[in-house]
Image (cartoon, rainbow, N blue to C red; front, side, top):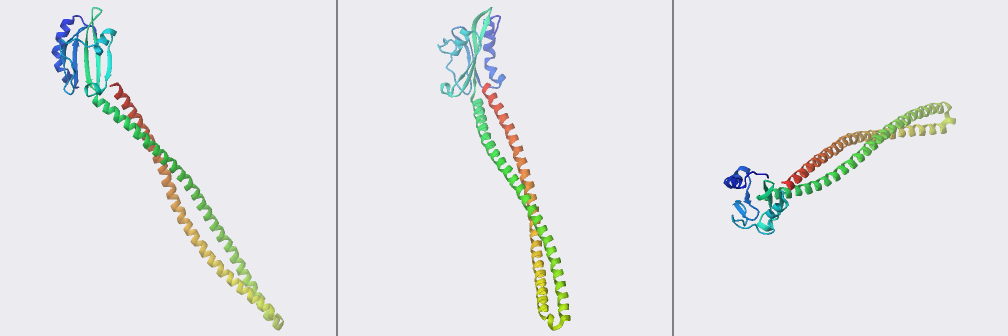
Length: 276
């Protein structure tokens, strides 16, 4: 930072130091130094730094490093040093082209570290949820395909039941014709008298066989009707299930997209926490 008069700047800065926490809205510790000693200091409320005005700047202090390098130094201080994580910002003061001192600000990073930790946990949790949703989505897709196959099979069964009805109608017509032939044969046998007695017995058996065939056709037709009704019901259920599986697949895709969006936001949050 370029200044015109170090003494005037030091006096003005020491006057506003007690108010900087309120101005910035953060719990900070602030100091100003020349090249070798701390000249002014305002401690933080939530942590304490071992700085006393008039003390020599100890070796290893980042203030000396910033003065030596002649550029701003930003350093993260772990919680093991002062009990809470800090971010120290050292800004050298330049007057007439020479380094004459330094301003130091230490800021409590506890909340930022908590945000960073929460963002990291959120990212991990979202990854786990995303993996679970992907598995559900894959299962929903499989269910959808299986349901489509089932729906096709039900349609084929329905078609087969209708074909059975067609065959039964054909058998019924044959049975009707057979009965008619038996009746005609019985009439002819009666006309033939004694000679046609045996033929009459055969004609009677043909009529009995025709009646039994008609009864069997009726029974099979009733069964086919029951199959058709149950197939229709299964088809209706299949369509509802198919629609539900399709909606589930679409919903899981939307959830996956939302989770990816949240995951992206959590990554942005984590990146922001890192640079605070």
